[in-house]
Image (tube, rainbow, N blue to C red; front, side, top):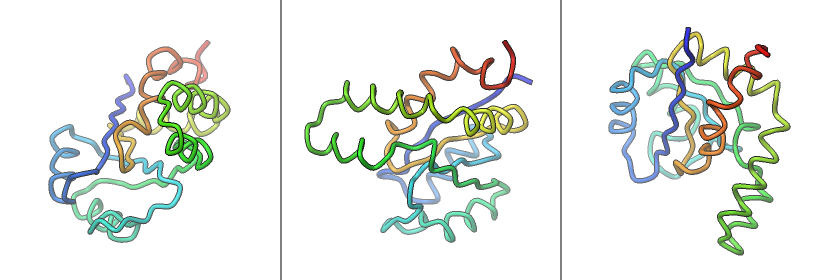
Amino acid sequence: MHPTLFTLGYEGLTIETFIARLQAAQVKTVVDVRELPLSRKKGFSKSAFCAALSAHGIAYLHAPVLGCPKPIRNQYKLDGNWQTYTRQFLKHIQTQDASLRELVKIAQATPACLVCLRRTIPLAIALMWPARRASWAGQR
């Protein structure tokens, strides 16, 4: 089966709109890459988020190692340098082979979606997805 992986940030969305977008894409598994799955936004803290997703038949997995580490996020807040942010995040994500292999397994079994506050955080994985998918799946 060809892996299906989407990315979606919830910034600016209600939980209802967010879930409607997941359903429109036929997503069956959400992979939350937030380091701390907490939110001031109603419905997006881990317990409420899991419950809302489950009520719509969507599974939840918390995988913070696939998100951007805090030092990289903090540096971006200071300097706003997107190139540095992207380069550092790519460097980080390339050290996460075991988690990426698991992500491939999930995406092969069911349409999956990486989730965080901003849509740009999991972008590096999405950009690397076509090029590295085979090696993450153990195919050489």
